[in-house]
Structure formats: C-alpha cells, structure tokens
Length: 539
Image 1 (cartoon, rainbow, N blue to C red):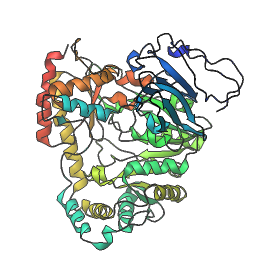
Image 2 (cartoon, rainbow, N blue to C red):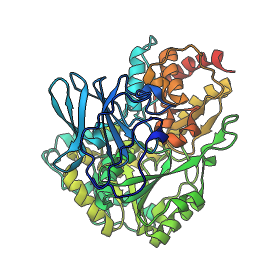
Image 3 (cartoon, one colour):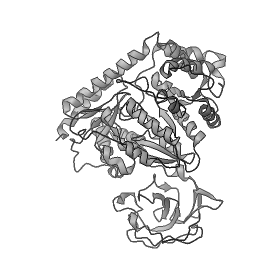
Image 4 (cartoon, rainbow, N blue to C red):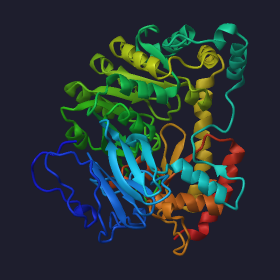
C-alpha cells in the first residue's frame, strides 16, 4: 500500500504513545520493532482490557486497521478511527509474535505472521479473521454457566412451536416426490414463484410476473447477500438504520461495500413510561446528509427488528422520494410482513418510480413458523431481479427443493385455513400476555407495532456493584451485563440490543433488552415468573 506525502501519521489520539508509523511512498511491510511502548497494553484508555498483556513487538498499518503482535502470543486488529479492538485476538503462535506483514503476493487483506516458535502463519482474510465475539456466543456461554436450568430462551427469534399441520403435510408430501428431491431451477421452483406472485399481486395493485419479477433464495438472508453481490462494487456505500439486523453488515462488506449508519431515536420518555414502537423516529435531515455520490443502496426494515416499528406511509414516502432523487436502490426487508398490528405500507407500492428502485425481501420461515427451512424470495423489477438471480446462482446455485414445494402449497392453502388473520391475532396475544409482567414490575417497554420482538427498558434495575462479570462482558455496554445477569441469575435469555448499534451510538439502548415472544404460552408464563425475580433489584 502506498502512502502519499503529507503530515506525519501519529496514533497517540487512540491512546497509545507509539512512535509514528509513517513512511513516505514505501510499502509498510517491514517489521516494526516497538520495544517497550508506554502503556503498551492499553491501546485505548477507555478499553484497557482489550489490550495486549505484554510488550508489542510488531505492528502494521493497512487502511483503517492497525495490526499488532505481542509477546503474549496474540495478534490484535484495531480500528484506527475508534481505537477499538476488531473481533477477538488471533491465537495460534507457540511463542512471541515477532513479525507481521500483509501477504506479499498483494493479498492486502491477508495477514502473515512469524513467531518465536519458528512457525509462519497465514491467517484468514481480515474480514473474517477479526470477528468480535458475537452476542449469540456470549448468551450461550451465560446459559451454560447458569445454575437455573433449563434456560427459558426469550432471546433468539426462532419459533417455539411447529408450523400448522397443513404446512407440515405439504412438506411430508413433497419429500415423497422424486422431482422435489432433486435440483430446482436456480431462480426457484415455478410453483412457488407462481404462488408468491398470486399472493402478493393484490398488495402491489398489479399482476406480478413470476418468471421475471420473483426469484427464490436460500432464506431471506442469502437473498439480501445476493442483492448486495449483484449491485455493490468496492467502495460503494449502503445506508443502514440503527439498530440493524446484524447480518446486514457482513453481507454488505463481503462484496466490498461500506456501511453508512443513520440511527433511529427512541422516544424521550421511553425510559420512564411504556411507549409505542412507532415513536422511534428517523431524522430525515440526517438521512439526507448521509447520502453521497457513492451511495448505492439503502436498507429499510419494516416491521422492524428489534424495535417493532412499522414505518408510516409518510415516512416511507419521504425515504422513497429521497432514493428516487438520488437514484438509490432500496432493499426493503419485509420479512415480518404478515405480522403487523397497525396499518402497514409496502415500499414498492408507493409510486412507479419508487417501485423501479425497490427489491422487496420476504421469508417463508417467518411467515409459516419454519425458520430452519431457509426459503426466502425477492420481488422487484426485471432489470434488477435478473442480476440478483445471477448472484444467487454463483453463491449456492439453487435452494432446497422439497421445502420450496411445501412453501408453495402453504401459500396456496393459507387463506382457506384463515391462517394469516389467526397468526397475526395469536402473535399480538403473545405480546400482550408477555408484557403483563413488565406492567406489574413498573418497567417501561416499547410496544411493538409488528413482528414478535419486545424492547424493555431496565434503567430502573440496579445490578449488584460487586457482581463478577467475565471480562468480555464487563467491557461491553450495560445491556450485555443486564443480559448476562438475567440469564445466570434468573434463567431467562434476552438479547442486548447494542449488538445492533455501532459503538458510537450504543448508548442509545444500553438500558434495554430484546425479548422474542414467538414461544408457547407455557414458556411465556415461565419466563414471566422468573422475571419477577427482578423486583428486588428495581430502584
């Protein structure tokens, strides 16, 4: 990598008194023997536990990342802008890490390191090597450590019950057919594409062409990855609202995209009283300010995970008009489109101009209580769908045949079973049933307008000052401590929503936890009974 002439680069602003790493117009691929840095174990003064535990012997600067190797046998990747550790330390050396460089074969994302044990390690690409320990791993660790068993899992958004019998019958029947156990067409089984076109044409106000405007994907997540792969080039920007579904970020970054974040803001009195999820607001001026000549796409999720907000028609129109003005592709994540408790607007229905830029994402798993089936789809204009299909072909070729067939039958029979109305009423009933305990405890929550997640504010909960949290939890925002405490002490798992925010905006939700109510009623009652144990910690 080349460094142009200019002022010296110093990294003291991120908390380390390191010698400057600047070298004009040469590759920074030689070893940097740092000797004993002042506070070498403190890469950032506010996050001391993230640092090395011994002297740093090698450092390399690559773009926005600084990579350091230490006598403590670990390699750590840092974000130069924030001074924060990116992912978990890389471990594998038998002795001190003596040298670092990026792959000399011009693979600038791949780290090569040499250790005192004589070993040379080629590490995975930085985009996967430096993954921070994710929230799901931490929750599972806490669940294992809890003396309260079995854990009531109100954290992850999978259903606690089976799809309805008519859907299961369709799956059983599909498995008995030879053609349903072989490859499907890469764009999806014709029966499913037709069923989706028939189901959604009334919502779109026109007849959808199943062959040109619908493509089937291996779950909604792979469908979104296919969309990003289809339209993003290196350096293209994608606007994402915080909080976000965590998979958005890696899906955008894999093809070389850059995420630009715009936060949603909770109601000002959300910490003191129960409010509607609709009161979370988007600053339209901030959104417009985030748009640059590199903005290629925007991701919108309604009904929203984890907030439960259903964006109003006016909000959707304002966002859509901005995208038309700047020619920005809209990825409208509508996987909870059958679970709304207030009027729901589909982005692609607002105008022909907006529809021309919109890819609508759907999920059979969310619709029919079968998240493990991994059947998703995208609906959009032919000039975009064909490229999503092309990317999907290269990612996984085709999706699971028998479950595509079963999902088609599920759509065909859903109305006859009054499934859509009943599923919506059932889920709203679960929301109301579960939130009774927070009304009882005096803990405010954000009442969802759609989906099956509830955000609860626990600012009133006083955690014991001497509570022994693991270091990787103690150094995360307060909601991680709340989550760990609830799991270990009460046996109830909930998700800390700062996982869905950038570090800069994590303070917005550090007192909240996310609960998933898509569980059997007896599980909801057990969770409520255990959560009553919070009463003695409420101040």
